Amino acid sequence: MYSLEHKKYLKKIRRNSILVHLTQILIIALFIFIWQFAANNEWINTFIYSSPKSILETIIDLYKDGSLFHHIWVTFYEVIISFILGTVIGIVVASILWRFKFLARVLDPYLTILNSLPKVSLGPVIIIIAGAGVKSIILMALFISVIVTIINVHQAFISTDSNKIKLLESFRASKCQIFFKLIIPSNFQNIISTFKVNLGLVFIGVIMGEFLVSKAGVGYLIMYGSQVFNLNLVMTGIIILAVMASLMYYLIVFIEKRCEK
Amino acid sequence: MLKDKVILKIRDIRKIYHTKEKEILAVDNFSFDLKQGEFVAIVGPSGCGKSTILSILCGLEDASSGTINKVDNLKFGYMLQSDNLFEWRTIYKNCILGLEIQNLKDKEHIKYVNSLIKTYGLLEFKDAYPSNLSGGMRQRVSLIRTLATKPDVLLLDEPFSALDQETRLAVSDDVYRIIKKENKSAIMVTHDIGEAVSMADRVIVLSDRPSEVKNIYEIKIKNRKNPIENRKTKEFSDYYDLIWKDIGYHV
Image (cartoon, rainbow over all chains, first blue to last red):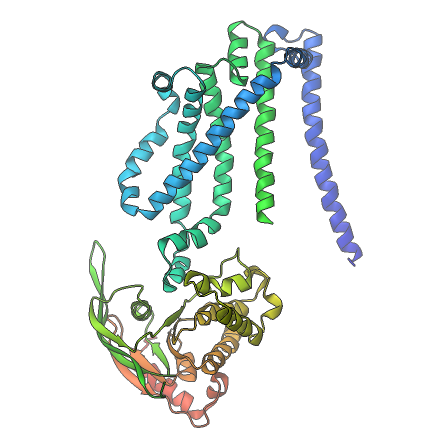
């Protein structure tokens, strides 16, 4: 049993966190309300700034003609594929660099250059090589995410406590054993945070790609909307993206919590 | 194996470290013999290359020159300065780390580990994680992890330096008892003269860098008991003074 003071303390914590959540909800509600209110009273030009109501109508229209989930699915599919490819390739390359220090030293300047290069500039080249389609979009997202993954994960791997490595070596552990018994588990947190960073980068890549070449997807919706000056469509696209990105972020957090147990 | 049998002969070990700016002669002319069941302490000023000797013995580093002769199948167990427990593994999983790596996870070894865990008072923490243990307990886990692979010679690298004074005395007593009970030979590196004199059968005093053997003391204490009791004897303080002067700490 807890003391009265402790109960008070717990209650205070709970009340605080409820207060935070309530305020968060209040902010978004207020934002939507003011936006709609301003639109109704024609304080803002709804042709440019749209309004919550028209966005909702646009979403319903898209849903009715069956294209809403099609666009979401296309973007989702591209994001997932590039996310998996980017993460896997990144971690594998980082592992190889950890294993072969010589290679890591040789490649270091190239990775630095590739990292600072705005990957969007590769867009035209990618389109010529991979064609104007989904392949180009995935390649684009891959380029944007993979270099950062390699650099971050490799950095984490080589910062592993050298005493723990020495301990394993005193047991005559092979490089492979050191990798799987120490490097991977001790860097679990780093790998998860790489996932989070990657997800954001992949979204950037996919939307960039969809801006350049696409026949469907949320990026396509935004691009198409801006070309025909349908700003309702543009805003709708942005809102859908925001929802998608946060859902996927929480999915990773969820996986992280499951793994920690 | 016979008592007093020499199991390890080290002759003229020399170790040079290279950096871009200079080379450092860390160890020079280091020789000694280790007998079966013997506890040898190596003391010397800090930074004199004591740990290097253990790393060389364990095969983690190569000596620049010199020879090490050992009886066949002599197995070393290295206990590092910090406990280096893996926070994501339970105590039991930490204990069997060496077994996993050396593919020794058979019934016999597992049974041995379990008996060690039980004997040394960690049974109720078997499935706990290292963060729930005190410094002294962590050090005991580290020792069990080292003992699990059944080494013949334990190499202890300042094993208690991370602990506070009281725990340190208690844990060194513990470790001493465990090593004697399991009938292991041990080489312990330390900069604590008291620790060396109270635990070891022989104390090797090293000079400042490059480490050479300055003197070897046979520690003869009448009514020899465990380290804490040994500290109370007259011989203890005599040896302590001798070695203190030998090392020549300048205040």
